Image (cartoon, rainbow, N blue to C red; front, side, top):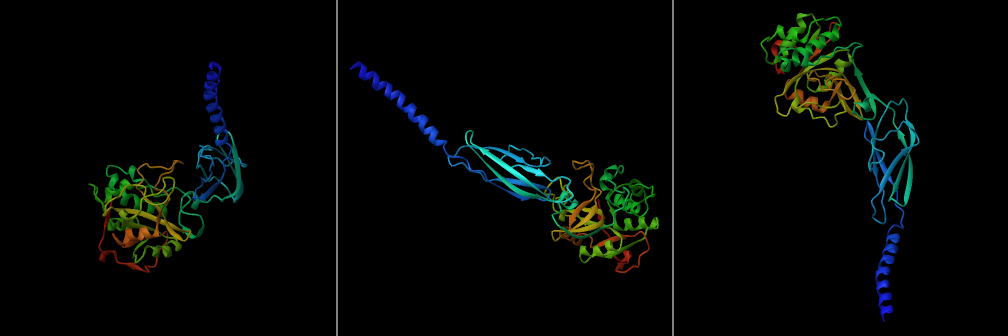
Amino acid sequence: MKLFYKLTVLITIVFPLVFSCTEDKEKHNHEPIADYTYTDEIDRIEFHNGSSDPDGDALIYRWNSDWDAVVFDDPYAENPVFYLFELAEPRQANIELTVSDGDLSDIISKGITIPKTTVERLYGLGREYTDGESNNTGYYWYIDQMNTGLHAYNNCGPASVTMAIKWVNESFDKTAEDARNTYRSDGGWWYTNDIINYLNMYAINNKTISLPHVDSLQYEIHSGHIAILCLDMFYIRKEQNVRWHVDKFYSAEEEGWGHFIVIKGYKVVDGEIFYESYDPYSFGKKYLNDTLKGLDRYYRSEDLNNAVINWWAYAIIVSRSSMKNTGGVNPGTIKHKPGL
């Protein structure tokens, strides 16, 4: 009787352990299934894990490429990213994902096309450039209004007109602070007629045109000219990505945010028109490559048009040579507007 009792106890203790081990083995007897998709996000490729495990186990991920130049932000992440790098032509690369449940594993490899590196992609404009023109120069003529003296926060006008004159004449040695001291030296917003008067003071060829639509500027750009706009930055959308050169990079959350910028070109990318500007309102804000954010900033045609129409529907056109006053208006007969 005692022997029977001991055997019964032993079976009672051991059998659940044996059953538990068997159950654990059965639980882990299905391999995980590796899978992923990826998307072209203009300046980067994003990978989206689609792997699964029939047993419901947590998975471990490892991403690799057969090309060493492909560097993931985190090769062990579930959904990693790699940023585009300098590439003169598109190139194929195999991207491999290994998934493991800690015991069993699966691997999938797919060939992807890494696109050619372009300014349009790196700046966040889009994928396919189809048209455009730029009247930039081979020398540096950008001005950050942060460095323009006591009234810096109101000096977008003095900064913009000084940039325009430097674009015409590289040797022009006056500063935005000199311009401020010429008109409204006690501070306050400059007006569009201050811009015109300052250009005339230094015999800079200019005319003022009406803007039924901001895309009218393309004719002037193709003619080799640049433009100074006075607009309400409230109507420019806020940037979506801090790495990109697109949209507004500072706060202007209320209507009436009058501002001066210089327009010096445009691009059509993926069917959308972007205008290339020098926006003086950098105030030291920079990209990761240490360039100022107002330098070669791109604003969308739709936004610029709203910002112009709702503030000052004109443009001051600046040229390196004399212009026929085609399409011009008499600045003395129009209402002028200010910018900060």
